[in-house]
Image (cartoon, rainbow, N blue to C red):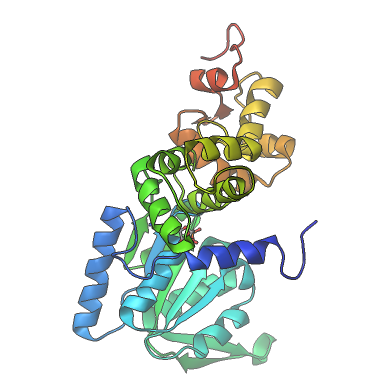
Amino acid sequence: PRVVGVGADAVERAAESALRPHDLTEFVGQTVVREQLQLVLAAARKRGAPADHVLFSGPPGLGKTTLAMIVAAEMGAPLRQSSGPAIQHAGDLAAVLSSLDEGEVLFIDEVHRMARPAEELLYMAMEDFRVDVIVGKGPGATAIPLELPRFTLVGATTRAGLLPAPLRDRFGFTGFLDFYTPAELVQVLRRSALLLGVQLTVEGAEEIGRRSRGTPRIANRLLRRVRDWAQVRGSGIVDRRAARAALEVYEVDERGLDRLDRAVLEALCRRFGGGPVGLSTLAVVVGEEAETVETVAEPFLVREGLLGRTPRGRVALPETWAHLGLTPPRGSAW
Ligand code: ADP
């Protein structure tokens, strides 16, 4: 059960926001997206107009929310935050849109999870800065046009492919965020250690960076867990020994795989003989939502060569068996 009140989520969020970069120069890595975004923002500033709508796409924890905040900061505009699951009726969205100020940045996280009627309202708002509010029901219903201030929509999605084309096309620019290299994660960690007042050695940073699934959010979280270990059982310094010992306690393996990652691979190999097995079946066996398996666990596993996606389902690869210390069955597809 979830902790209520000041629960784990709230603590996590507070810790996270303390470490967020405030401008593009502080934002580590993603050089391509950074340059593209810099141009979009500089041009808008030069024109003295709100920036074009921007979409950020990529797995969780890679910096989409941070970039949305940076867009607002660089435009000197206030930021309004919402999310797809919170917008289930067109009316919810109309209320948010009509309360925006000129130039304001509206961030919609998980924009692919908005309800269809709200999505349609959003197309119009993005393109014409106008919405039709339907008043009444049945034959007597009338559409009242409502002018909106010019705003910038920043959308974030873990699955750009799921966005309907008309919505995708209305973003002037899409930034595709990719996993970070271990060297980039070391940079993220050094910056965070400085902000947290944690003593971090080069080897300590490398050890944590290598085991953070290419994800800054995870790197920052592991840094805090290793710091705990160092304070309680070590010398207070986050070095390689502290990192190795703490990550063992937290069940993060040599390649950075966490419990969910390993559960997926174990199920694939032990229950389904290496597949192919459908995503939904696999998700049921590991006790997670299919979307979580697909957007949280799989992108990294696929990139690491530990999982294959085929039209017939998910399959184990030679590295999968090796990583789990198992022998592939004779006559398996691989
Ligand atoms: P997302 O919205 O993609 O899930 P966030 O923007 O919330 O990810 O980032 C998660 C955490 O990782 C934040 O605390 C943020 O400070 C940190 N972070 C993400 N990207 C970077 C980066 N490029 N440089 C430094 N820190 C980053």
